[in-house]
Image (cartoon, rainbow over all chains, first blue to last red; front, side, top):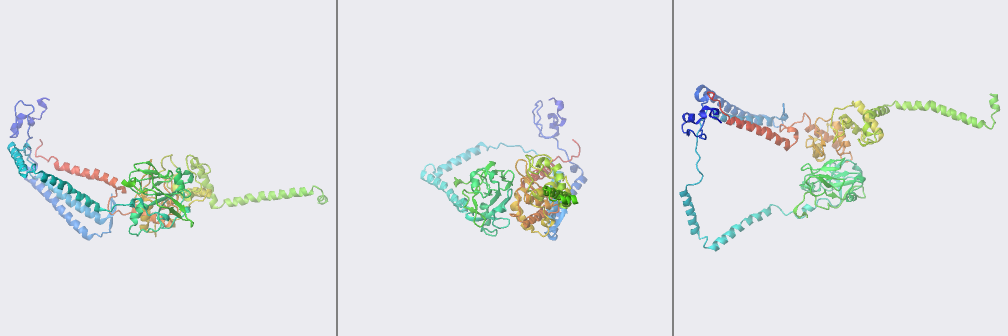
Length: 351
Length: 269
């Protein structure tokens, strides 16, 4: 690179004149070029321009005040349930929209005014603050090290080993108290994860109509959700119970069922599977009636309901548990027991 | 006459009388029977079936077979009912443009009158759900809150909580339900088109279906209110996150650039 390519004012020779303090060693191509010369803004020179900037900043702050007053007025005046149509957004709550708009404008204009103020009126002269080594001076270091050694000697840590070792023991035992407190956060689950509200002789109740289901209600290609008889949505622990007991019922043509156990546990092709994904317990019921696959919306685990609930895709580790059902003597579908394996995701003791 | 009566005891007389009687019966039958069947053809129902059969032969038979018995390219239509025909054809899904993962909704090819004829023909092949009446699917007088509960239990897993639709496996998807005729929503629940499971009246009553239609009308139409503002398609965290990262962060970067930008100088350097 020849000297012709360098802009004139950054040349070391010119730099010395332009800015005092810049190092200029003649003949050194790597000399510190220093700062470019300071340039004044219009507002630094022209007082009228400065006044204009002042007014602009004050204008923004005033608008912000008005927006805040608008916020308060909107809060007091607009009914909560009023809806308005705002073009690209749609039918929105008038209050939400106005509160958001006025608060946003008020906050933005405070910031914009401050930035405009700093950019046009506050000093913009460049300053240089030289760096210093991080290391402390050697005499300070020597003093600190000497103080430490003296302190260690005076505490007699090295000499009185009984004190030292018992102190280490006390300190290392102390955190155990915290670990034991964690145990109080919850009761041990016991066998809760292994049992659901299903049991022998419990009828399958349609969750849509709260009526017990008969086999003829369920057609090939349909999807039905059932809960165990005796549960009510108003019950205190309904959500806890249904989170494990949720059941989906589909009907396949018996000749399409590939798994022998699944066929044995079905009633004329009606199969009952747990609705809880065996990966992390999301409800899976994206049922494709032509492929007989159910799909989990969380991590795309896919189970084949015509093949014993086998996992055909995704991270799930277990086949979907099936509930063994039969028709009772009154013609209703009923469970022949609880699920034979824990429903939902795996856990430590599951084995 | 005398000649005839003279031969009435001839051994072949009985045979002649029998032949004569048979000829008269046959002639009378030939004269009257076709007239009767032509009369039956005049009824609106059989005309519709006849017309529907012609439309079927032109537009549907190549995939579903000449007798709607199904082929390797299309399922059997025996027993699917008028509701299924009305749903598939009136939403433009059938006739299909090409074989694929799923037939998408498009502009219908047939007029409603032609669709009714096709439906009449298909339902003449085997009993199936009939198309619902306006009273059954109109949102008026339905329980919207109950409809919401039922929608979340039965439909939201695929169609999203407000019916915005979602993805399934291998290119299949649950379509957005915005702007879908309530009649077609009702029919889809009745018949379970393509990979959607059906929800027959035995498990999801007619009242339940009406409630669901009313819920969708409330939350997923061009008039439905969205108090929170811009719904961003109603797809949840993905579209919201994308919006925040692209537009929210973009705006912040623009402001940061403005804050640190070179200010206007008195003279050009």
